[in-house]
Length: 78
Image (cartoon, rainbow, N blue to C red):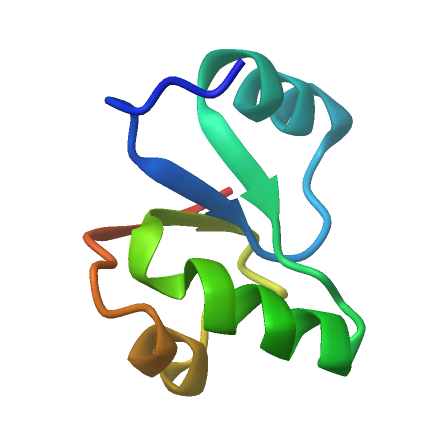
């Protein structure tokens, strides 16, 4: 259940299964689609709600994606 008082956490790319499970159960977390059309549609609808991005060092969150997330407050690398 997504709680409206929790920040939206965006998972960018694959992460360890244990981390993905923790994000899903403990946070309002969603995974950024990998398909370019789905990604564009997702960002058009939800980008303004994302406050935290979780990713890995190998995937990262580039400046282009950061520019599309106007309320991004933190990028967490695992």
